[in-house]
Length: 158
Image (cartoon, rainbow, N blue to C red; front, top):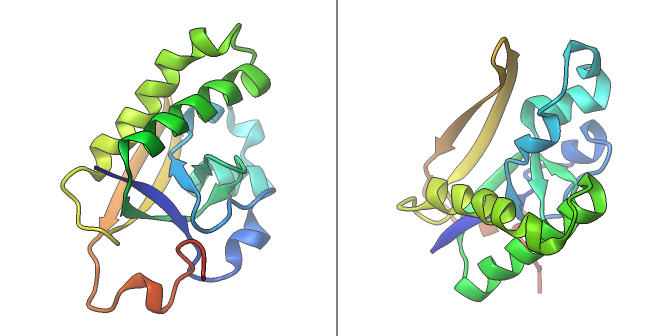
């Protein structure tokens, strides 16, 4: 099974986001964070997070690029637990149990997006605000010859 993992091709995430996700974190689009946004919120760093930010599932910071990486079922289940807890702590869900099905949907969406993609496929997101709400467009960039480990921080360097 595959999932998205934050990579950092350069240091720009540290400058453009209020909080940058760390390389190696598992990530989801995190579009739910923008569900009630209007044009008023789309300025400065929040605009960058809205337009191009993936949500890291450890720091809950944002990243510009993620890469497809293998994930175990146990790791996937742990992500659903972390996200459900985040929904209670940061979004007012009444309990982890109540938030778990929504967290599972978010996790399943990312598994589906990465399914069948080769490892090290890069994924970027472009969001826009339309009459019907937030629109996500995802672009998948196939691996190019050299492994990402050669030039990008993908996780632990040890």
